[in-house]
Length: 98
Image (cartoon, rainbow, N blue to C red; front, side, top):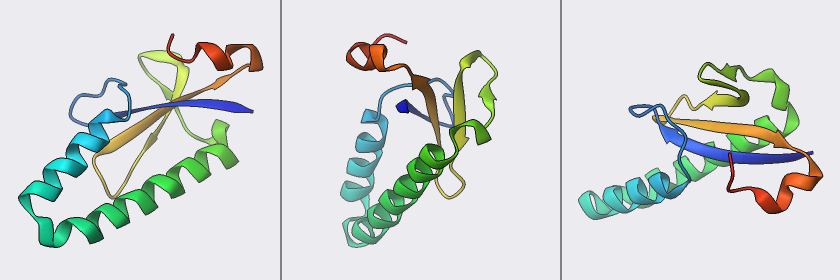
């Protein structure tokens, strides 16, 4: 099974790439460097757990209301949604087209 992932801040509700997470991590690191490392560590742990849950049971999560080709995983501890869809092997090289 091949899964293709996007993410979104809950405030926008539209899929984007993972750059939004990198931007937010950098912002936290600049604003509160003394607390950034533990927070980033927890965030990465939650992301890893989310991706593992999706890979284990991809059909468990609801379809996205705007486009039923995609499913969504709403992260509970951080304000993000992970969007994903299953790809056929023939789509692996063409991931940037949604």
